[in-house]
Length: 524
View 1 (cartoon, rainbow, N blue to C red):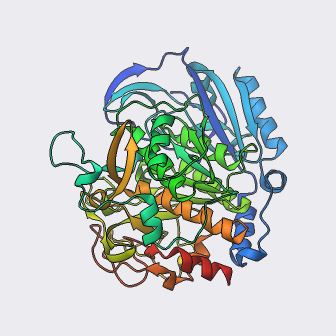
View 2 (tube, helix red, strand yellow):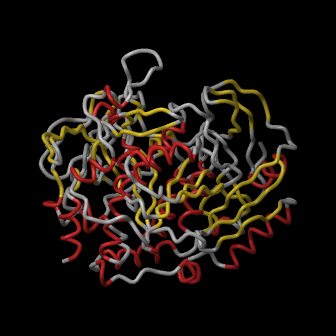
View 3 (cartoon, rainbow, N blue to C red):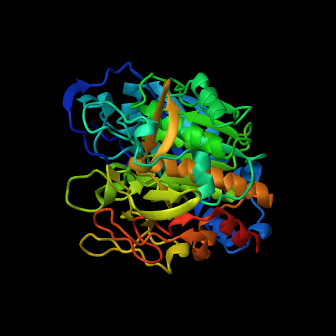
């Protein structure tokens, strides 16, 4: 690999090669599309959102998308510099979104390798054949100050869905609804967690998916069985060429997609539900989030994300680009809920250390942890940290510092050095598949758990809250940390390295919701 004369590295772009079989260089004629994230005025936007956070919801004035673009978006001069890069390397300029601060470029593998001073190789991994690179991405020195990330050169899977089907104990059979220890429909959980009355009318919930799909017939069957007619309106949006593609296997990403849609749709049946499908890469993930946040056709109010992976598997440039996208969402009044993971405090890593899941660890997302729930009627009999067939993710970020709303809880890592940082999760709800959610996926009635279910449940609750209050609530986190009595505090159990305790903890955050109490607190 030759680094072009005068080229500078993009900060935080370093990657290592993946585990797998090196198949050799990528064909020089293979066509690639990359997303460049430009600088904009992110520090000023952070200050703007911090000022919003200090105001009660009724006093906030969220930005319009045009205001976000004009005040904090990418400068025309920076976009012109990207056009210059494209001209010099015979690349094609695709979509330009100054509000999202992104420009897409298309070209051959050989052209991209020359433009960004990278070597692209094919690898056979346990997830299939991917394109990979190592080291840093470079850009010309005259473009360096303008570029914060270059995504899409590498196509390794970036995230995994955080759902668990309740097992029967062996093989690939899954427990039907009737055989679970105790299972719940989303409507039953809305009663147990005392959601305020409402249907989510006037709200649009975006769901981000990186694979799989749904069958409309399954959704109609499910909602009809719950007595919800007409069924909620569900729209699929394709991003980067990936759309709704159900496989027919509930243990595939279909389980994730349908769980998210059915939970949101059941608790907020009058809300518009828009599902954004994208490739499972760092570029695809960011492009899907930006598609939802900056969608001028669907006025998104809430975003639910049930995919993620250990922070250590992300480049710093991708972590910061996604966090900035969530920051923009907050400025627009859009609340983002992310599952905290299903593999305990290790988040599936085997190095003996605690790891936190991203994008849940973004300070601009509401991180959703999991519990084991027993209920009698509409009352909670017991609720503990989920740790059995899987365990709730949670911990302390190695990348993000402690946000202002968490200074009072002082999140401290269990790893050597006891770093303080962004603590995960913020909130919780039932996630144990043994006390999970009754759903209907690929023609089968099943019970599914995982923190994947918690994010859409909280998204549906927020749709009801915003309907009742007549306004958007983002940034929501500062308020959640001031209404402790509106949560059922989880004080029993652990997720590995972290133990439940009174108040916030790195297992279930502030606890599970009392929806009506949260509404009352926000109203005053």
